[in-house]
Length: 541
Image (cartoon, rainbow, N blue to C red):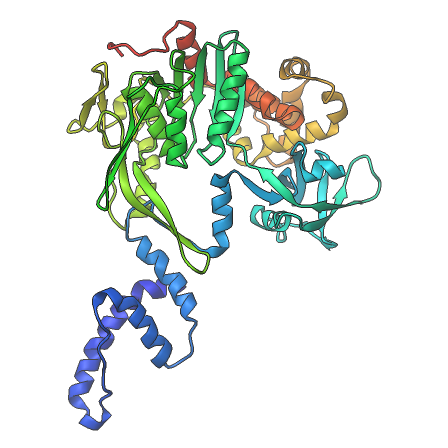
């Protein structure tokens, strides 16, 4: 309701001014209120708020008016400038800072109850004995279950807090007939941005990065070093669904792969003259073959990374066209703890192209529909459906043609995989039933499954179990009618998802990704290219 009021407010004010002029002429002079100047247009908003505070007929909360007005003003700019209220700023910053204070668990809400999926090694919960499979039903002696009681946001607010503060948890465990009580002292919990690093085969190392935060560069170097120690000679860098983060971090990571004096990225804006980032030649991975994976959700710093590798002909980009965010934001803080992320410049790849897709000021909703429009136009299935901007043609160091004006187009396009995708599969995915079944299976067989020390042993065991039959029965109990034909058509994908999530519940991401990627066509294409020593682009690509 407040938003509607704000939208109509300018029209109401305009009408009031017209009526006020008419009334001023009709009524006698002694009824006219003397008006004072509100000053220059630059102070118009602050003056208006002062007038309202001083003269409005009723008492209003000026702070509330400000909190309503600022987002509307910022929304009139580009789609990536944003206002962050004080209550949300800490959570937003934690994603990039690399740590927060909490109890140290990964959780999922199932059957209106908090389920502990994993405990952070060395974290507060592990130290006091919390275990995967536990159900948290009380927080500080108050019941904390039920559909209308818990949500992801509410759980985070309850479990996170200042370092050193305490929280009392009531826990149900399958091996205990009574509720267990634990008092957890909150501590710093790392937020990892490198999901996994593992050897695909004897030569190829794979590393997946979910964002570019304060700790990402160190995590990235650690992951690369682990792979190199295992004799990796070629690398797959997976930036799919990575929405970006801190520009400087991406620059440092790219520097690891480039010889000296190669342009990485440059930025330029109205108040910010051109600033260039150039490789210094200190990188430890300048000679190895590499492939970078991107998709339609790879944005910002991910596109800087892919664009620098592509324009310098340092590696091969595989996947689908990236999001198209080429704007640089600077975060400015206000005294009340809120902040604004304001776009201050555009960034450009080494060839000079802007990756930013088109937008209109104040039309953020249309901008966000771009991904849906690309899907509807068939871009995810066929590269011929992609509209290249022929007015923005650039060349790489080798002379290969690349295009500006809307994301990074991969060197090798891989369409979305529709083989085995059925209505049944989409339904069980959208309802979270695969995840629920995997958790239930893991919980009921945890002692047995925990005996397996690596994903290969675990997967070999799972492949001998009637998972699909049991899953179909479980899904039917959740309201998804059994469809034998579609289950048969989706069997490989269903098996892959179920095994992956069971593996994650038991052994973590180091087991989850190696299994999940076995059915990933983009990943498999990258392996194929590197197996053929195709990790360096040629002019024909």
